[in-house]
Image 1 (cartoon, rainbow, N blue to C red):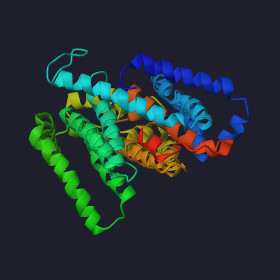
Image 2: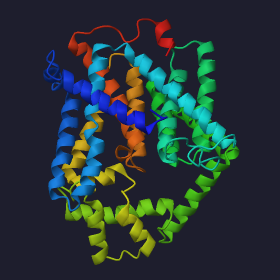
Image 3: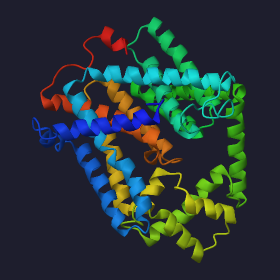
Image 4: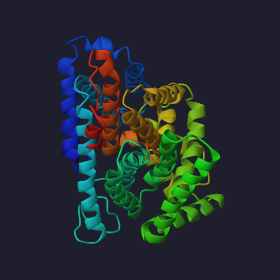
Length: 400
């Protein structure tokens, strides 16, 4: 998953075919439609597809829809996992191993041992944009940190997990992706309180732990220090009315979103219709933005998944999106560790959505497809007559 765009596409197509070939067998379709999350996913994608009818840019709408149509692969993955839930540990292990390989490549770039796709120490993200890679690193770090918080692993195992966690967290902070760093910060608190009761004492403990990690990162990583300082400068410029910065452009998105949503509250501009509507808006309102700021806002996505949905798909699409995330969060999974991972996964995406439309980017969209499919498959396994435990004993569980 983190190493190849081509294989990402191949695997999505493969699981779509798996689903289509088996959809009529063994009452799978009937059992799928009893799952509220699956129903919401279907309704969400169908509504986005229908919204192209009132979009001013149907070509752009079709290019956006391809990401959501790929979600059919979720059902293919869920189908396989529901029949063979023991495969889950292999998938998670394979994902972690893929991230280990990408880490080796990333550190090699950082220390100028090699360059990949023309990138080196300034942006040590091997095969994807640094924002997307930061989400991958944040999620991987949280898989490991959650195991450190867990009581299911021995002291020796936790030593090895801790070493790997340090390298992943370090990689997160030598990269420039503040999106993943913010998601990681929030997820630390969520993961901690999945294992320990909520109290003032525990809140202070986890806060000090988070401060410790981010303080070390600030003092050791020049990249992280520069990005934090740049963020502070961006905020100061926004307060002065200047929006031609990384954070400033994101703030400016809210100004135009407000007017676009008021104009198309219920159904939105239609999928792919945002850019044309922004250009039309600028013809009537100046907003005191610089010309290059307006050009950027009119030719790029909203840099926010929530804004993107509510602008293009209105209140209906936004409610369906929230229902999807809620049902994923509430999905019942028998295995406690996988259930914790589900909560962490949803948390990371919900936070990262504030800064980036992850569903409109190949790597982060396929990451969502993979793990959503795993979670649904794990939940469905008991409903499909497969009562086999995901992890037969503690020893097998620890092998993950």
